[in-house]
Length: 490
Image 1 (cartoon, one colour):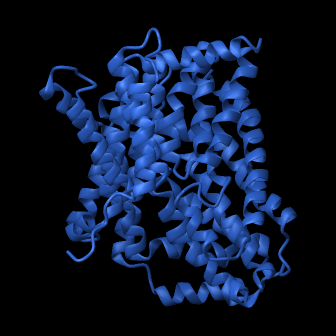
Image 2 (cartoon, rainbow, N blue to C red):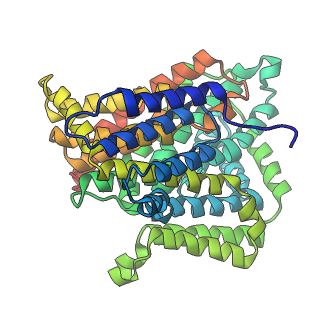
Image 3 (tube, rainbow, N blue to C red):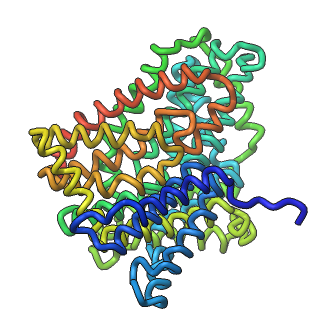
């Protein structure tokens, strides 16, 4: 070992100082148990380390799990019980749902099915630049339910297709020709991602965490299933997906507006892929099976006794891909992203869960709710204010998971304390957890991939992101709120 890669000193030191100040310097508030306050210190220190990228998020999470076990904050004086608590996140079904789904999504790239779907839509709708934008939108939407890594979907599958289209028109950053078509398509490419991530529980990794936090915060009053989430998102998502390419078109109109050669180019790419292979057919069949099981179709037709747990369904899908040879066990073992997600997800869910169990989230929500209540706001005004603060605070986060873990539970509980309907509040905050990805070039893993291609300047990116955040919020709060009311969710 000639070179070590330890903790980065500056962000690590900041995280340690923050945790020590909360633990030893700030007095434990009245009504909060000391061990709950100490867990908060570890939790905030972990979030600061993640934001500062002191180490990869999985490595930070392992350290956090070790500290929870060592300090015994969840079970003072009982080391064995504290260790069980520290490792309890690994028994959470939602964590493994995302882990298995990420493994399954490997088949999209390995078989070429993801690229085939993208080029197919462009061959149908690509005669105009706006048509290419909608083709990319439709392709990512089709992939969203079965690709819980929004980075893999938007950055790994759709972005290469977008780049190949831009290159075919000579639109390249190094040639200073981004404005011809590349800038527009890149901005569309990215701004599809937050919307599709909001559409399904399995469309991005933090969504199951959101479901978990809503279930804990609302108790038996409201619990989201996969199909409930998808139905709730359907109408506002369609509106956003239709409006977004038009908004970007108005902000940064491409110089090339007619693209008669794009369908031919896409057709050539499809011909290069050849006929649909057996592996692609199996992958399509697995995805169809997963959507049927996740949507609860067997239970709807044959009764609740045939309902299949979503994580069980994902496990079945992965088993089929392994048994048929579409994926090998080596493919699964080498997919660091899936195993990394399971580890950091387990740590953050564990800490968030025990913050709730130890009463810290209840105290924090009461404090925030009292502050808003003293402003004389109704629950409607309070919900809007909470949503705005929650969404736009993402300017300070480089990870949606860190943001959700740090703020969602407290803001959800504060809104409930103000009298907001749990379903309405939960849905608004849940969908905002994805929509906030539009804001910056570091908002989620997809952003640096597309921004790094150089088609858009920082100013163009941030301007588009802010405008789309306003447009999306209006659509999801107004049209979505009416739609959820009609569905009887609140």
